[in-house]
Structures are given as structure tokens and as C-alpha cells.
Length: 332
Ligand SMILES: [Zn+2]
Image (cartoon, rainbow, N blue to C red; front, side, top):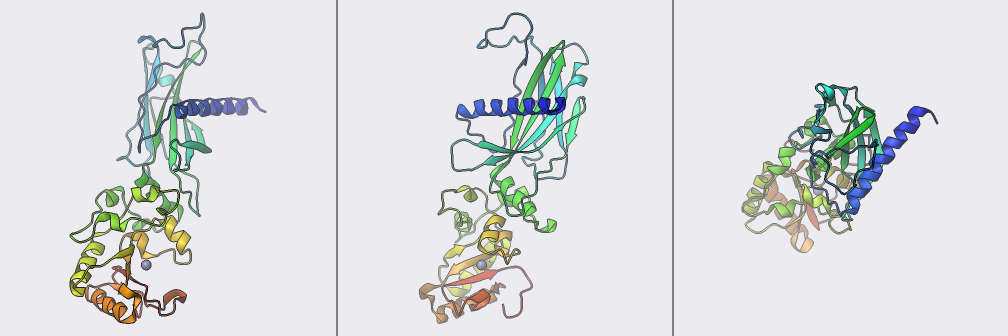
């Protein structure tokens, strides 16, 4: 192997080992992590070996990394800014700091710890005080069902010793969900913002929990309940429909993450459930009379109503799909 390659793999192995040590301590990483900078981590120490358990001397050099977390989100086209400052070093040593960013996919959501799975990218920045980097996660046209995770590593070589500091940033569940709109190539204008999730709420007669993506909740993985996107047009429309109907309405399915839309209906990639404006409602007794009743109430509330024989269904009165997309297809 070429020297550079060996060096690169050495760096990588070091990072993996560091990560594994962190995990074995039961690290249950919070949604967005800005770990405090590690104090001096000399890679090789000249002279007598120090006591490994001793607290590092406050006078030892270290690199302090700070990075604004992009409104708690890194689903963004704004470059990530990393600022590294060498402390306890001769004047101007910060200009000698090198940065490395490594992108990972966090494997699985079922265990208590995250397992880092694959390297997305690795870039070494030129030396400098301030470093900007545009995150460009690898494409995932069929989804990944996992969070992205970035390690930002700063290294300072000083008098033959390497001092390394690291911060990690992990997507929260909302970012993971938003990432799917990119992964599945949904039109940019239709992609929800972070605050569209945090602002989502229920209404007088519909609790927000009724709108959760239920697709995964019956399986081992339950992470989809952590991000739900509901537009006000949906709750207002359902309230209006309920008033017209004069009775309670039960929601079977409302919000779907894009990966759910893909897995239940890949031939309808633009299904409105993923945009927080659609619901499938339970029809009492599954009779035509009840179904027609609900359709009338929905239409009067401004909804589009999927025909009962749509998509290969044959006069299926077990549920009724309603959405508030605005202009409805013919016969909806
Ligand atoms: Zn539907």
C-alpha cells in the first residue's frame, strides 16, 4: 500500500477504536451531540509514559473545536463551519491545526447503542483556524432507515507530538426524516423544514399521536414515531368534516415518512400522506352507505376523496382516503 493509504487507514482505525470505546460505555447518543472537546490526547508522548488514568495537566496543549449546529439541523446546503483553536500552545499555533471530517451511517435503531457502519466520506482540510465544509451524504434512492453521523477531528502536530480533539454531530429523528425527502428525490419545494415538525400539532378532537406514522410501530423498529409532520389544513379539514358528519372520526393512517410511502406504495411516490395533508379514515361497518356519508362530509369540508375502487380496489368500503391537496383529480 502507498504511504498515504496506510496513513489514512491508520487514522480511520484510530477513529473506529475511539468510537467503540465510547460505545462500550453505554453511549446512548442524544439527538444532536456536540461533545465537549477532549483534552489533550497525545498520540505519542516523548519521555517517560504518564499515568494513563491521571487527569491531563491543565497546561497540556489541546485543540478546542466549536461548530454551530445549523439550527439543530444539518439537512442543509449551508456549509458546516468548524472552528478549531489550539490552547496552551505557542502563539499562532492554531494555524497549524488540520481537520478531518468523516461521515458515517448509524446502523440500526433497535439496540441501546449505535453501531457505526460505513464511511461516507473523508476529507482533510487545509491547515487553518476556520474550516467550512459542505456535508454531502451519499445517495440512498431506496432509503437507509438510519441516521447520519459526522465526526470532526482536529489534529495539531507540535514538537513531534500529535494532539487530537474530536466532536461528533448526529442527526436527530426530525433530520433523519427530512433526509428521506432528499434521499427519495422529492421536489425541493415540498420538503418540510425542521420547524414544520416541531410546530406540528393536533386539534380539539384529534391528538397529534393519532397522526403518527404507524407503519413501523408494529415492527421492531419504532423510530418513526419520533417525527410527525401535520399541516394545519389537515387538522382543520378533519375538524370540519367531523362537524359535517356529526360524529367521531377514527384515523387509520395519517402521516407517512417518505420511506413508508415508498414501501407501501412505491408506484405512487407523490402520495399525499408524506406531506402531512392526508388521512385514511375508518368507515363504520364498512358499508357503502357509511362510506358515501363520509364522502359527502369530506367534500363539504373541501377534501379530495379517493374513489372506493381506486388502485385495483373493488368497491372497498373499509376505509376512506381524504386529503387537502387543493385541486383534486377528476372523480375525487
Ligand atoms: Zn391514503
